[in-house]
Image 1 (cartoon, helix red, strand yellow):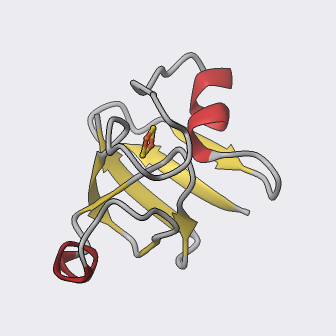
Image 2 (tube, rainbow, N blue to C red):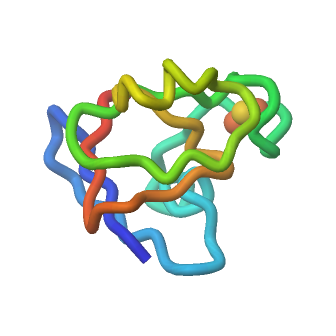
Length: 87
Ligand code: FES
Protein backbone atom coordinates (compact mmCIF):
# COMPACT_ATOMS: atom_id res chain seq x y z
CA UNK A 1 0.00 0.00 0.00
CA UNK A 2 1.07 3.57 -0.57
CA UNK A 3 -0.34 7.07 -0.70
CA UNK A 4 -0.78 9.51 -3.53
CA UNK A 5 -0.83 13.22 -2.80
CA UNK A 6 -2.31 15.54 -5.39
CA UNK A 7 -0.05 18.56 -5.79
CA UNK A 8 -2.06 21.74 -5.72
CA UNK A 9 -4.93 20.45 -3.59
CA UNK A 10 -2.93 18.45 -1.06
CA UNK A 11 -5.54 15.70 -1.23
CA UNK A 12 -4.12 12.34 -0.12
CA UNK A 13 -5.45 9.08 -1.53
CA UNK A 14 -4.64 5.73 0.03
CA UNK A 15 -3.87 2.99 -2.52
CA UNK A 16 -4.31 -0.40 -0.84
CA UNK A 17 -2.71 -3.59 -2.09
CA UNK A 18 -4.85 -5.11 -4.80
CA UNK A 19 -6.29 -1.82 -6.02
CA UNK A 20 -4.74 0.12 -8.88
CA UNK A 21 -3.71 3.72 -8.36
CA UNK A 22 -6.22 4.83 -10.99
CA UNK A 23 -9.01 2.87 -9.27
CA UNK A 24 -8.14 4.45 -5.92
CA UNK A 25 -8.06 7.89 -7.53
CA UNK A 26 -11.38 7.28 -9.28
CA UNK A 27 -12.94 6.25 -5.98
CA UNK A 28 -11.87 9.65 -4.67
CA UNK A 29 -13.47 11.38 -7.65
CA UNK A 30 -10.23 11.92 -9.55
CA UNK A 31 -10.40 10.58 -13.07
CA UNK A 32 -7.18 9.84 -14.93
CA UNK A 33 -7.63 9.19 -18.67
CA UNK A 34 -7.36 5.45 -19.30
CA UNK A 35 -7.18 3.18 -22.29
CA UNK A 36 -5.33 -0.13 -22.06
CA UNK A 37 -5.01 -0.30 -18.25
CA UNK A 38 -2.09 -2.68 -18.81
CA UNK A 39 0.88 -0.35 -19.05
CA UNK A 40 1.11 -0.46 -22.83
CA UNK A 41 -0.40 2.71 -24.29
CA UNK A 42 0.78 5.55 -22.05
CA UNK A 43 -2.64 7.23 -21.99
CA UNK A 44 -2.59 7.45 -18.19
CA UNK A 45 0.94 8.87 -17.99
CA UNK A 46 1.07 11.19 -14.98
CA UNK A 47 3.70 13.62 -13.70
CA UNK A 48 5.50 12.61 -10.51
CA UNK A 49 6.93 15.46 -8.43
CA UNK A 50 8.15 13.51 -5.42
CA UNK A 51 8.60 9.89 -4.42
CA UNK A 52 9.84 6.91 -6.42
CA UNK A 53 7.43 5.03 -8.69
CA UNK A 54 7.57 1.25 -9.01
CA UNK A 55 7.26 1.13 -12.80
CA UNK A 56 5.29 -1.90 -13.96
CA UNK A 57 4.48 -0.71 -17.47
CA UNK A 58 6.01 -1.59 -20.81
CA UNK A 59 5.61 1.94 -22.13
CA UNK A 60 8.44 3.96 -20.60
CA UNK A 61 12.02 3.52 -21.77
CA UNK A 62 14.74 2.76 -19.23
CA UNK A 63 15.89 6.40 -19.49
CA UNK A 64 12.37 7.67 -18.89
CA UNK A 65 12.05 5.42 -15.86
CA UNK A 66 15.35 6.63 -14.50
CA UNK A 67 14.23 10.24 -14.86
CA UNK A 68 11.75 9.50 -12.09
CA UNK A 69 9.35 12.25 -13.19
CA UNK A 70 6.34 10.32 -14.44
CA UNK A 71 4.57 6.98 -14.12
CA UNK A 72 1.63 5.00 -15.46
CA UNK A 73 -0.89 4.81 -12.59
CA UNK A 74 -3.05 2.18 -14.31
CA UNK A 75 -0.56 -0.52 -13.34
CA UNK A 76 2.47 1.00 -11.60
CA UNK A 77 2.89 1.43 -7.89
CA UNK A 78 5.36 3.11 -5.53
CA UNK A 79 8.62 2.20 -3.85
CA UNK A 80 8.20 5.07 -1.39
CA UNK A 81 5.34 5.54 1.07
CA UNK A 82 3.99 8.49 -0.88
CA UNK A 83 4.03 9.78 -4.42
CA UNK A 84 3.18 13.40 -5.07
CA UNK A 85 1.64 13.73 -8.52
CA UNK A 86 0.57 16.64 -10.68
CA UNK A 87 -2.61 16.13 -12.68
FE1 FES B 1 -2.45 2.39 -20.99
FE2 FES B 1 -2.02 3.20 -18.46
S1 FES B 1 -3.88 3.19 -19.56
S2 FES B 1 -0.56 2.62 -19.95
